[in-house]
Amino acid sequence: MSRQIASFKLGDTTLGVDILLMKEVYRSTVLTPIPDAPEHLRGLMNLRGRVVTIIDLNVCLNRPASRNIDDSCLLILKTGEEIISYQNQGCLMKTSMGEDIVGLLIDRMDDVLEVEEEQILPPPPNLDTVEEEMIEGVIKREKLVILLNITSVLERVMSSAVEA
Image 1 (cartoon, rainbow, N blue to C red):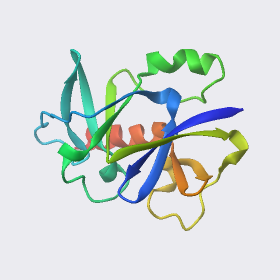
Image 2 (image 1 turned 90 degrees about the vertical axis):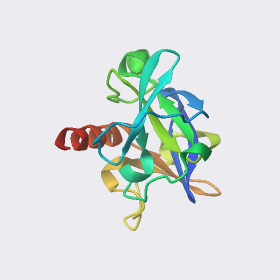
Image 3 (image 1 turned 60 degrees about the vertical axis):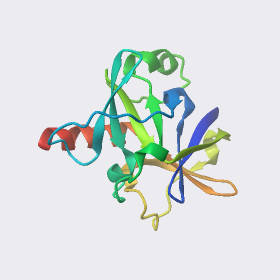
C-alpha cells in the first residue's frame, strides 16, 4: 500500500507525518502564551474562530526550544473526528488525535514523499535525535526521513501537561 508522507525540517533533521493527518500549513505565528504551561506548550492561536494549541515539536523531541517563532511554520493537524473516515477505509493506521486542534511548530515544510509500506524501516538503534516510541519508522531516500508516530507525540504532550 502506498502512503504520502509530508516531510518537514527541524534544524538539520528531516521528519515526516502521514499527509492524511495534516489539515494545513500556516505561516502566521501570532500566539497567546499560556501562563505556567510546560515549555512544549508554546501558546494558543485563533484559526478562523477555532482555538489551536501550539506545541513546540523541538521540546517534545528533547531538543532546544524553537527560538524565533516568527520564522517558523505551523503544521496544523486534523482532529480524531476528521480522520475517522480514513481509518474506516483502511487508508490510515489507528491513530488517536483527540478532539482539539493541535499545531506543531516546525522550521519549514519540505517535500511530499510517495512511499510503499515496505519502504518504511524500523528506526536504527543509534538514532538519538528522537526517542524510539515517538518514531513509526525511517524512510531512506537521498536523506533520512524520520516518520513520527503522532499518537505517541500527542500522548507525551498530554501526559506532561497533566503533570504540570
